[in-house]
Length: 415
Image 1 (cartoon, rainbow, N blue to C red):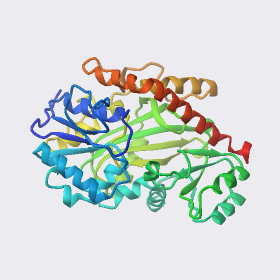
Image 2: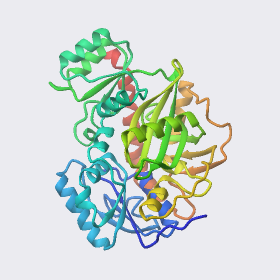
Image 3: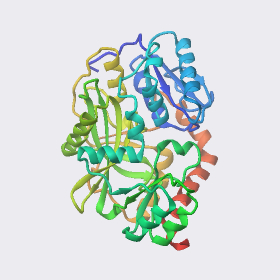
Image 4: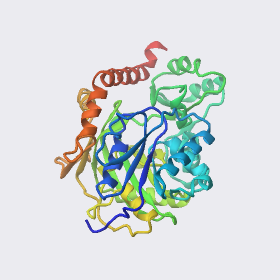
């Protein structure tokens, strides 16, 4: 490997909320841990896959919901920083953590290292409405979107909408409390929309978006790390083959595919808004008009980031650590054709996609290499722990996700 990380500067995986089976955190612990960087993580208990990694120096068991008072969370982070005892790079794995760090930079700047960013920008990017407004302002294609403020607004939208439409929660953070909809919900008729909307209360916390037909669309991802001047130190493009729930959930199977047009779009947008740090973007290519439409902008590390590594051995988490410790980030081409598989959700996703007949035209016929989310020969315990925690409750959860997805798609039948 043509670089060495600063082993005197540890890193802390910051996650809020209860989601112990998070392969992205495990991937970050392994990525930096293999370079000799001391790794710490916030975990729900002492027996999560992340807590069992051989590359973890210490797990800080701290149960949170992600809805606690910001002052409480900041004080908890500072307490952890005092226990580590030296400047530590923060690696947020969810929007709650990314937003908290950005909005409390001055309080956290002593014991922690992180990219400086406009304090309100991560919250705006995590919001569906905030992101859409930035896309409109900077001329970035996005699905046509409406933001109803009342039930009457939903009725007015339904009168002129072209169905099917998609409903999403307006703010990312509501997933920790009482979301109006469970993830991305496809609604096929006016009656189905109005039936759902009656449960949304006086102020619907949703956005209503045009539906991009699966048969006419492709799902793409961009992962990158941008330095303080919004210059990309590492930028990668890939295509989703499968997700769970189908077409609307977490990446289950993806490939690295070179896409200069997409890379240029992402770089220009990030420079325009002035973001600094790791980004995880979801875009859908609409074959009907030939545009890449931005669906999600995650201002933090994405769970599937280990899909992407340059020929010089750099991924976005390594780029973050190198840059914040004053070391150059070596250039290198991405490993085109490499694939990423999330073992515990790719099998049900595979079965669902085969039944639908959906295929991804840009997926290579044969992978040049495979990165598994959980299983690693040099670090087997996270995989074993995942299996032990996943089998019974995990299968039940997958079934519930599938049922929720099916109910959302078939709303018109009950409308």
